[in-house]
Length: 98
Image 1 (cartoon, one colour):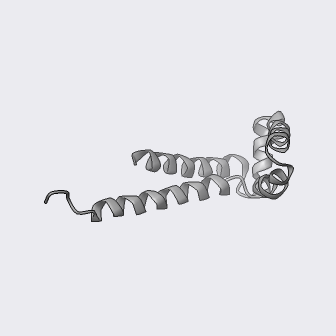
Image 2 (cartoon, rainbow, N blue to C red):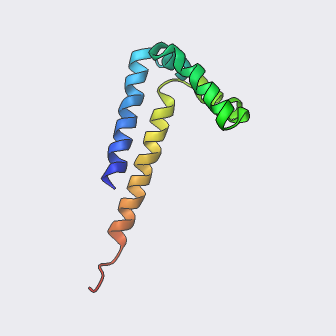
Image 3 (cartoon, rainbow, N blue to C red):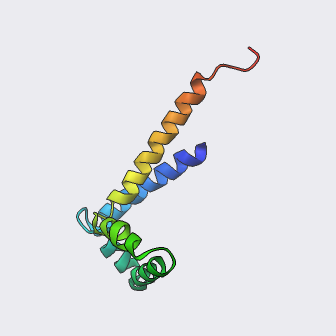
């Protein structure tokens, strides 16, 4: 379970770093292109050939148009919420044999 907390905190930090590095309004696709120009073409070709062209059009492109900080921040927040729910569940569970 500490893995969830560490992953959540790393994603939140990555979201903040992307916001500061590329600007709070810069799309994720622009940030990825600045990092590695060939990455988006490779990802598009791989997703369209091996998974589904609709997956690229309907899921990947809308995510790439979002601000660069938003995707990792939302994923980190969801993992942090999941961690909190699991930790609360573990605290409420009665001791076995007690």
